[in-house]
Structure formats: structure tokens, C-alpha cells
Image (cartoon, rainbow, N blue to C red; front, side):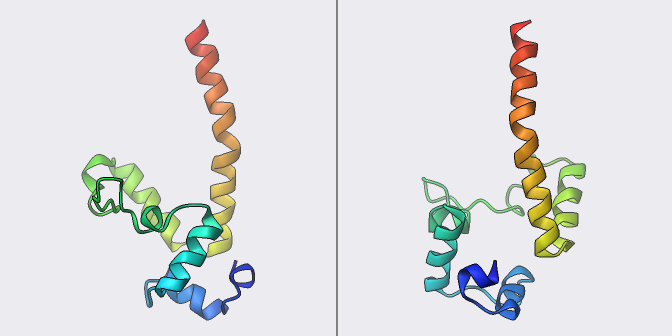
Length: 103
């Protein structure tokens, strides 16, 4: 990812570990990389409400909060593997739900 964004690995690591926050120009670059708006990247909804894991914590189960904490402890490569696995499983899950609903 650092190579694709043309930034150093230590810079990316500092962002991931919350040692440093990206500059505004970096937020624009990151939003393009992830195909999201800067507002979405920052957790700001259409109404201007900031949505973060901390502010939404009440809506998560203990297990979901633990998964988030565990995920954050993984390096970027392992996080990408998990995200890709989830993306691969979602279509099959939706298809399974649709079949169940049509029965």
C-alpha cells in the first residue's frame, strides 16, 4: 500500500498505529485509494455526525468490539487478508439468505 500511495513504510505505519495523522493532502490521496469520500474516511455522515468505533461502541456486542480490537493489532497485510476474506464471503452469504427467504 505504501508503494502504491508513494509514501514511506514508516509513514504508513505511523498512521496505522496512531502515532501520526495524515495531512490533508494525504487524506485526499487515501480517499481516492479506498474509493471513499474524505468525510467517509473521517467517519463523518451526511448530517455531519461523526461516527467512530468509540461513539458507536454501545451498538456493538462484546464479541464485535473484541474483533475490532484484535483486527487493529494485526499488521496491514493480515488486515487486508481478513478484509478480502470477508468480501469473498459476503456474496455467498447474501445468496444463502435469499434462498432461505424464497423457501
